[in-house]
Length: 193
Image 1 (cartoon, one colour):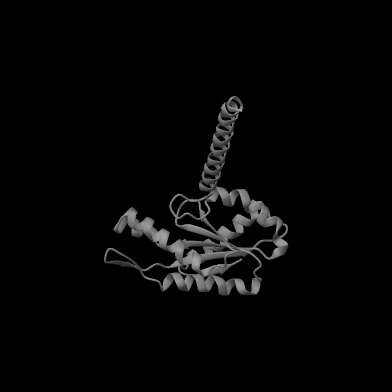
Image 2 (cartoon, one colour):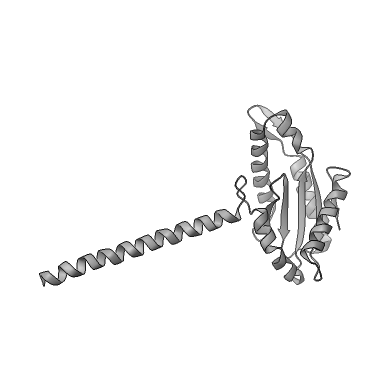
């Protein structure tokens, strides 16, 4: 009996150690995989993840998917006049503000690592898209961002479009970026294509 225990106990410890190690490795793998999907600064999805999922959004066009591309007006001035650190803080707080304005079913991505963000609205009627964009634009415009006794006001231009069933990634992004370009030509505007 004692001889059997001296064999069984090390085997049990080996199995326990192996399973614990495997569990910890798998957990770390999942954490690292999630980090690969998120923007390092704002912790929302990154452009790489948007790029991987854009074809899924097109396939789901029958579910009334819309995209909004938000760009902060004159954001470079914040970095130039204050600091990049303040600019990073503004982006982080902007993401918090936007996150409180959208539904949990909607998705937020940092677009190409700048001061642009894409929101993917699921199950939205095209009639309401302009209203949604205006609400976001006004919320940003009327929200002071304060840091170390500095108050910064921002405005944003918003380009929006509904995903079409015959879209390609290229056509969808071209239309979205054209809508933003039109909005930016006047600054602090929403333009829907």
